[in-house]
Length: 328
Length: 126
Figure 1 (cartoon, helix red, strand yellow):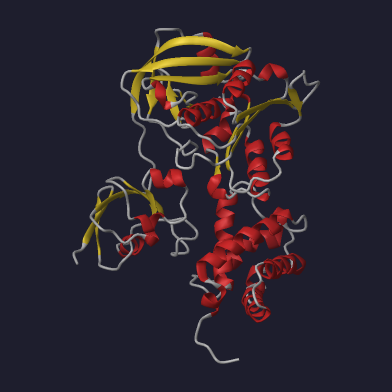
Figure 2: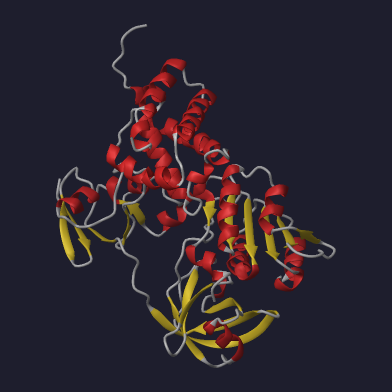
């Protein structure tokens, strides 16, 4: 058996026969987070940059992580030379031109851009948008990948939010801005088309969820899809009619608009979106759950969903999505 | 009963058994108002992984358990949040109930409980 070469940034380490990637790196005093060395704690997660890692090294990882060639260094016995990374890659930016601006509600802008280069993304991922002077903010991609070189974003105007104020007031059709490579793990994979799905979003947290739903329906997802979109007041919601129409078109898609304060108009549920969802869907065993919005809502929902039977493997939320409702 | 060389971990069913137990155990712990404040809400997946490492250890499986790590990890809970025997007892209660729910034989439950019990002084920083 031959030895395998592991390349990590500018360092090269020879992995001995029967030696894990983690042990090889540690032997050479390369600093990599680790703890249990048995695949349980997942702290030694790395990413293969030259193709799929050995399947056994992906044991217990979420499907989206496997899909992006992440693996556990402690379980990885290389079959070939590997180039790996343990830090997130540097942002690569491409140019995009604004082709449409439209208000979804008084505070949320639907921004459509056309990218110079076609980006490979999955509905639910996010990109970093960069203004001419370098100001960067993360926004979820609100459309499915069917649209190739077009991307839409829901930009909520926040008091004192430099980027969002600028996008609302000064950014015009024809202007350009830079867009990073798509990132994040809160997205739809068509690997289990009969699985029931619950999506809970607050405010502009609807953006990635709408993309995910469009992607799932496009792939013929046949399991039940339940969307709960919430806001304090009815003004903070949008696309109510569009979602109702979608629900009429697809019998397996169910939509509930929720308001947590004041009176709820006809057809709108009263209460926080996550509370309404968890009451209406008491058993989430084997469900896939997508969460997007206020950080407290995401944390609470994660816990509720888990306690109601969903496994962590099936609960998707991204750090950025968590921040998106409070920061611009 | 005859002497057997099969390890406790194998008798319990190895990793599959640990996975089944974590599923029940962690839900019990999180639902228990007496102790759930000790479990960080912000990164529940990491927490679940820690529970798995703990149960693997208690099941006599492969582990890197060090008393020092356990002390350090729980130090701030002992000093700042009042972690004490009553909370440790509650966790032990859930561990036993979990194994009973999985129909693990009593003699094996006793062995698992004994291993888990051996971490008490480290976890409570004594």
